[in-house]
Image (cartoon, rainbow, N blue to C red):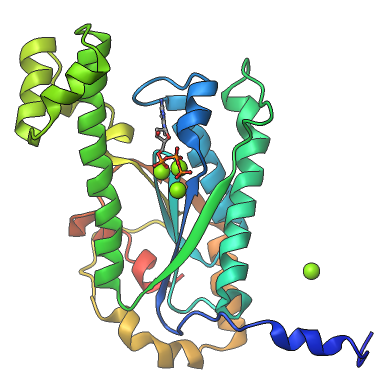
Length: 282
Ligand code: DGT
Ligand code: MG
Ligand code: MG
Ligand code: MG
Ligand code: MG
């Protein structure tokens, strides 16, 4: 194999290593899920089976990749976060993204029948996902990224809930409902839901309002104030960590239970109660 006259082609491969000591977020998104959700008759605006299936696939991804510290999912997308200390695949962009995308897709398809027992998958409506990696230089910005996705979830869900209530319960046409909602703010939508349909948006299910967070659970007595700079000062300590220390941490992470929560990740409390997510230890 070595040193054949063809081997020069190897030099065409370009490096795609992501910057060291940065948070890596791989966000995947279902391809053409608008059509797919129609074909399999997903409940509008939220299909609990579809969301539970996304979460089940995400849990498997977290279990297979102990370097991941948290994931966040809404609709047909999921964001997976690697800690700045992550060295998986020498931090190669292509390797990280394709591994996440294919592992997620494999589990999504494998588990489909568990969540949709009477609706078998059928080509050409087979689920597939695209993915991209983005790096963030510190935990503040990483948290702003997570907050961005959760705010998006809230805004879209309030809109979709109001829209589909006007159509399904109010008998309005899609066009009329869309027209009436144009230019409205959150308060207006809450009022339409409450005054016209007796629905208090606050009582809607948390999974729809907040999306889904997946992370490893370690017991903790009480909240610990976050050191915002912990991930900025860690590279030296990371380098000093011995091989056996790193292996020990990996083992702990592998053993830990992966849980799914539907909670606020914008405020400090979530992160203060689970300091290991930002510290990466364990
Ligand atoms: P893309 O991502 O550019 O390939 O195109 P889509 O069609 O996947 O569009 P995207 O990702 O912007 O929007 C997600 C679509 O998936 C959206 O049309 C609604 C659909 N979807 C996701 N979750 C649910 C659900 O729980 N129920 C229903 N009925 N539809 C859903
Ligand atoms: Mg997309
Ligand atoms: Mg999509
Ligand atoms: Mg999407
Ligand atoms: Mg190989």
